[in-house]
Length: 250
Image (cartoon, rainbow, N blue to C red; front, side, top):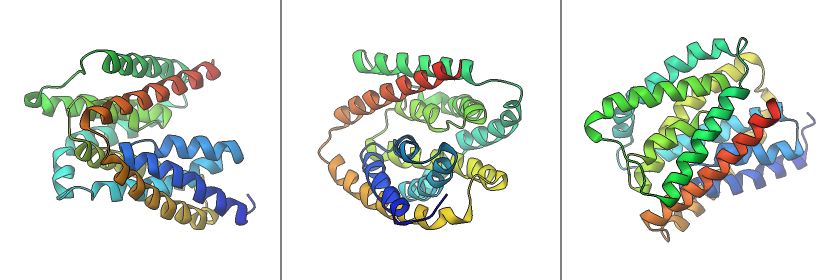
């Protein structure tokens, strides 16, 4: 790709928008970043340019809590399960198509979102969290290893824990950061991430940070109930987008 002022301008604008959504709801930056970038540039460079802002903003997101190390300790089983299962599952990509898996995932996300919008939200027992983390972490690794979609299962798990918005955002930042580390390493080794991407990606990170701070301020006007209602609408839209992606692969 040719590096020019237009690419820097594009990265600045895209990640200002994506960062604002991320600051509001603790999710959305990866999906919005890759979707908007893909409108203007080829998908592969868009993926590479997306990684550094996701990695650094999710790291910043972890430190929004008073004690970030508590988050790491609390969700270490989920993270470990996700990384281990994701690593071994990634080898299956060359044998399995992902259209069927994306169809199942889209169906689960859509039904789960509709249930939480129109009925009482599903919750998980805190006493069984040890087992829930292993189950959902393994499922996240399985889905992520086959499709590179790392955040969907984590959002479902955290939302069912009925956390405060600030706790949800910090925990989701940690899970995204861990998943992004493993995927980013693979992209570096495979050449998806190129040296020329560093400058534009860092600019995108700066504007994403500004957007995140704006979103954080706007979040103060949302009650916990409205936070989750809006979150599920966004999650439903993500499910519909997954469904369209699945259909295109058949």
